[in-house]
Length: 370
Image (cartoon, rainbow, N blue to C red; front, side, top):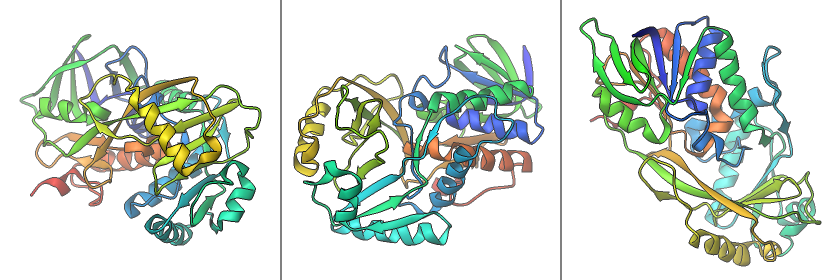
């Protein structure tokens, strides 16, 4: 039997960043459990690696801003080389989508995010492949970009490990029981672990983990999304920003000498390793042909699928469970886990070390309990 003050379940960005920030606050008695043999096997290792600050959910804006600032200026004691390519982002909008982008831009400016509203001609001048695309305007954010997700995740874990955190991989949790002293007993593939506090950073498995502990069931949906890459393309400029048509839900960015593309599909699936759906490739081709015809001749080299877990109201779940004392949630990061990872970990660590009475209403799991 192994004892610890804190057990974090899940070694993706939510769990790793929480462990990192707890360690920065002097917390050393941490065990991090990951059911897979390596960290980042699921969502944290299969995403588009894009750093995006301008979002439509107001409650997330400070987290995207602070998280991106961390990624652009990693601490001096950061233990892992990480490349951040500050190529910027270009969000395209039409009709109502363009109106929403203008609201997002105003909100971003009020929070100190460097954004500009561009005309279609300005956007096409910056990314010529958009010459035949139809949109009403664009939001340009120069401080967005693309991050090395594997180096970032590794850095969080290495720092936590160097400051006392113990990590167990291939350690699936099979049961969580309440102890007479108020703590928890976790039965894993590697044995029994006891803890005063359980931190649920299980991603797509967050609800199943919570159910084992008797915590509330939250409206979290794991949704499959596909990413596609092209072969090398002579006309691609590696300094192009990532480009997202938010009205029609399709995006692309430079990837090596080619492109990474996404049709923004979102199908709810049970937790697991999602199979690929070949029909999504056809959906991507249809969207490109209609909304970004300059990319119509791009062929697909490979593709894969991962899960994004979203709460029903579009906000994260960060906080103490309203039913089970000592059970803490860090879940539902959706497609924003990379950008917000540090800010989410910092908020979680602050709430955890402050004690069970501290909550942030916008992210508290109690908001779903009537």
